[in-house]
Length: 316
Image (cartoon, rainbow, N blue to C red; front, side):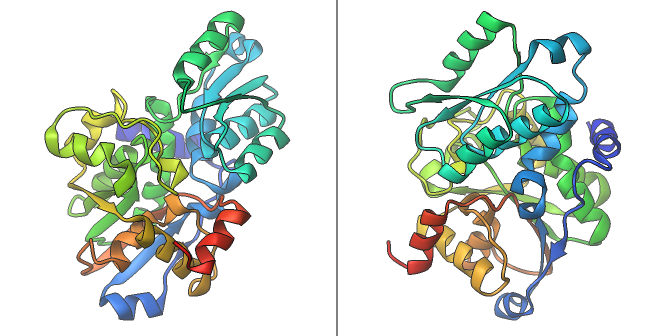
């Protein structure tokens, strides 16, 4: 799959940002290690999802583009598909839950997409999307279980490994596994010695369970603050890739996630959403043993102002 990742890199040139790699001397001193953050919170739409969406949608044929596209997402994939649809002049429909962060919902609408709201407590987003897709003939742009989506997401880790040599470890947030599986393939293609660990919230640990039992576990509508990881399960494509290329899975508490968001803002002066702070959460909580050179993928920065205010208040 590395060839598809390299092709995605070429396809994204001039469209996706090559995001910065930042470090914190205070954090390095605290941990006794060197940590390098790949900041996809500075990517277009504020998250890595733009990479996969553009790589996938730009390859549709003219008939598919003319008929339109549909996607389902709690936020970042929604924004990415909406923006790419606008860029390529494609009619776009997004199925979003009623508990999606307002900042992500408003941005998706702002890019011109038609948004269909559903209740995740009583409805299944895949079923709603399939019904609309069949009615209008739209092409589904899956949020993670698509090889072109995975290849696009992987370019973030590819860039990090090109810039920072001899990484001992790479920490990657995990929702549906597109970013994690792609990152593992990309990292090991350049730095085979690099150990890749996926990070999930304890309250949304379906991938952790799947990885260590060898059976695909589903956990619908988990109650974590990290809304980007509320995917019910890994996909049919991402699960075996994670089994093959990822070295470990790890979980972090809700409080550890909040502390990581606070650290990113107050010490590094960057805004990171809870899902994007999972790697730092694993380091600060000492769930991950920090040694050597560590790469961390910050997946996004689209946090609702109300949520950020609550986290900064320090209240549980």
